[in-house]
Image 1 (cartoon, rainbow over the protein chains, first blue to last red):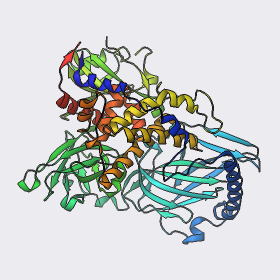
Image 2: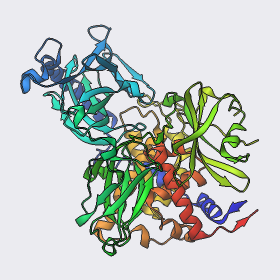
Image 3: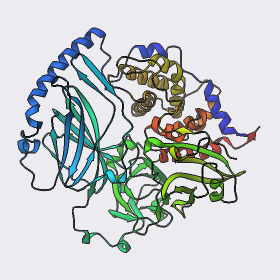
Image 4: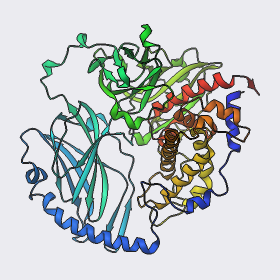
Length: 431
Length: 175
C-alpha cells in the first residue's frame, strides 16, 4: 500500500537536469569563494612557488614552534600564570628530507588524549602519500577536563597552526562555534562550560593536517557555588523581545518527560523558537501563540543533557544552524537522572542505521525481542525520557553495553521503527 | 519475522568509493557524475522548491568544485551534496535579498506541480530529508552525512515533513 504523497514523491524520478549540465561542470567552479581551477601549466608554476614559500615560511616559523625554542606564549604574551593546556604536534620517524606523518596529543595535568586526524596528503621530495582515516569520534573517556579560561599553548615541530572551537557531542563534522585564529601566541579558552572539539589545522612543509582534540571545559569556580538540584529551574524560558533571544536562566534541569521550553515576554505575534542541541544541530522548532495574549508557547524536547542554543526568528524565514553563534546558550542538566542514555557502546565506525516496518508483538519490548539478533539474555528497556509524549525509545543492552536503540510507534500490523541505530559487530548475521 | 536491510553508517552502497583513481583525489569523477548527478539534481530541485535554474547551477558548481579540489575527499558524494545545499541556499537567499523570484513564486512545467507546491510549504531541510528518504530510499545515517547534520535532526525533519505532506496531499492509499 502506498500513500498518495509517496506516489507524488516518486514522480520526482522523472525530473532530471538539462543536457548542458556536464558542459557547465567542465567549465570549472564559478563561485566567488573559490578560484577557478588552474590549468596544468599554471598548476605546476603555482606548485613550485608554493613549495618555495612553504620552505621559507617553515624556516622562519621553526624557531617559534620547535621544542626547547621560544614557545608561542613565551615569545608573544609572556608565560601564562593560570592553568595551561598543551597541544603537541610532532612528526614521527623518517628521514631528514621526509619525516614521517605527524601525531598530536592534548595534555592537561596527568590527562592526555591523542588527537583524531582526517585524511591528508603528505608530500616529500619525489613522493607523495595520501592517507585515509576513519571518521573522527570520541568516547566519554577521551575528553580532557580543563577549567574554563585555561590557556591553550601549541608546541612541536610544526610551522604554523590555526584553530577553531567546535560543538560536541555529536557526529563529525561538528559545527564551528568560535574561530580561535592563529594559535602561535596562545589563546584563552574562555568559553561556557561544556564539551567541545578543538580543530587545529597544523602546517608542516610536507602538508597541512586537520587534527581534532576532545576537551571538556569545567566551571572555573568552587563546586559549592553550583546551585543545588532542587534550585535549578526545570523550564527553559526564552525571551524573544525585539527578536533577540535570551534565556532567563543559565542552567536548566530536565523533567521526567524531557526538556521543557517556554517562550515568555512580549514576543512579536508569530515569532518562532528554534532549539539547537548539544552538537549544534537543529532539534526542534515551535511557533508561538500570540504572546501578547498571554498564551505562551511551550514544547518538550527529547534531547538529553548538554549545552543547548536557542534562537528566535520570524515565521517564513529559514533556520540556519550555521548562525547559532547568534543564539542564546543554556546548560541543560539532569540532576534527577530522568534521561536514559541511548549512546551506543561501540565506535561510530561500527554503528549502522536501519528500520523495521513490521515488528510483531503485543508490546514494543516483546516485538524487539522477536528479532533474530536480539538474544533472550539481552535486556530491552525504555530509553531517552520514558514519559516523553512522542515516539517511545527503546534500547537493547547486552552484557551491560547498549548495542541498539529504536524509536518505536504503533502501526497497523503492530509496531514499526523507522529510526534504529545499532552496533553491527554485535549482530547475528542475517539480521 | 520482520525484515530489515542493513545500511552501514560508514559505507553506504549509494556512497560510491573510488571506481577508478584520479591521481590527486582517488575518485573517478566521470563515473560519479554519470551515476549520481541526477539524484543530486533531484534533491536540490526539491530543496529549492522547484527552482530548476538554482538546482542545476548548484549541482554543476558542486561537482565542479569537487573536481577542482586539491584535497582528498574521503566521501566525495556526501561532500558534493553538502556543497550543493550550501550553494542553493546562498542563491535562494540572494534572490530573496534582491526581491527576485523565490521558490514560492517559481513555476514548474512538469506534472510534479502539485508535489512541488506542497514541498514549498515545508522547510528546505524537510524537503531534502523527505526526498532523500522516500525518493532516493536512503537511511537516516546516510542522509545525515549528505545534509551535514546529525541523525536525530534528520529524523525530526522526516517526521515533520511527512506529517505535513500527508496533510497537504492526503492519505488516500492504493495497491
